Length: 92
Image 1 (tube, one colour):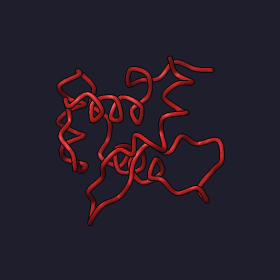
Image 2: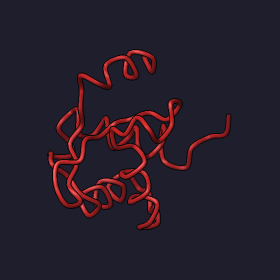
Image 3: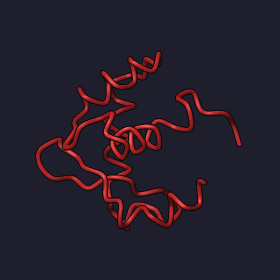
């Protein structure tokens, strides 16, 4: 498996930042962009949009794709720790 450009993967890094309170919930693309830049990364705007949309808890997207976020409004997301507990334990 290749090395990620953005830490352990942009979706996972956003999840960890929100889980630890670095990124306040609910967050949007602008918040994630600011977080990424604070880490020294400069992902394209559409990369952040795709990560948030594809990582939303949407079980029909893919059974192998981690579902980190729950959409709570127009462009706003939160993490769902309960649904991510198994995924999180796999990372440790």
